Image (cartoon, rainbow, N blue to C red; front, side, top):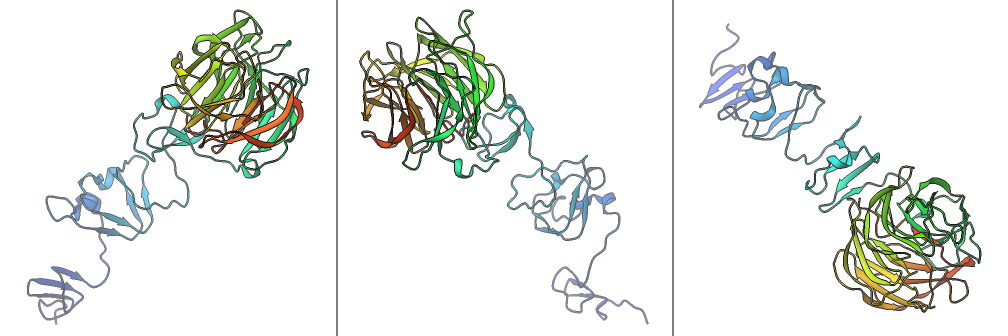
Length: 453
């Protein structure tokens, strides 16, 4: 007896326009009970062989076995208009390219490589969430819809929210480094020592590394030294700031930063050789600073704040001018407005929206606190008052609080004041530094400039 009969046996059964193989009751045009094995599908067009209309797969195709997708053998995926679900092991050969619009879920059990390139090769307008590896900084970064930001790849632990006050005069230049925990109240603790005693200097920081550059009186210096904020210990030499007119000294300068770049503005050989120079370093590397551009006027000791994209140098010398720069690109600053009064020797703090500038001399000591919206052009607005009329305080901040520590009034003080940056009002007492001092450098691991390049 024959082994296959049409309409009789379950081996092959054709009934009512439906064909069954291995079933007596087919439920589709072709109903196969069991596994289908196909040999040499590559020669017939690969995956695109499964088609309904003009070579395009219009419905979901499921691949559950180990599958090799090779451009040379199986053809590209460009002929697929439907959905393919792969639940087994899939290998895409190195000579093949697979392009998809969006992947809903992706699980990788071995390794996964993201696009990589230099900072200058970034796409300026990618889709929010785009991720790449930055070869210049050795960091993973993502685009938030406005800026490229670094992905934290370290455990900050108990140091998150740490503020540091370094150097100063008490009354002579000293090397003391103090630290505080910004979200709490209390007195400062000893962190370590600077390798070079200094005061009247500019400080900035990334989330991990703090830099103190320039300063000094009467022993001016252009030395940049750095600390690792999460760990206590002495500073290490980083490089040198640019000098002015052949002089290496760079006192009365101020600094701000993004998460990767530190920028110094103004200062010079105290007291009569101030400059409008702006220079910068890449915080993650070690080396001398590079010319960035010029401030709109010659000035020194101005409050410096940043939101990660834009940096402001506020006041300084006998000026009320607020100078703005774009941190990621070099160039001269522009005048965007004025403080409520002309004053120098003030200090600035910021979150990612507001810059707050406190203290200074007009030439009398003042307790004035001003604030600006960093992203906007315009004049500063009154914020409140410090507890003391003081010049040369150090300052540091988190995204929530701004702190001013030390200064002179008219004698050196050790008090620390704080404000809540998002609201206006007078400063409150935070605690004390370990010694009375003025003109210390202030920095933190959580200021408003972190997150942008």
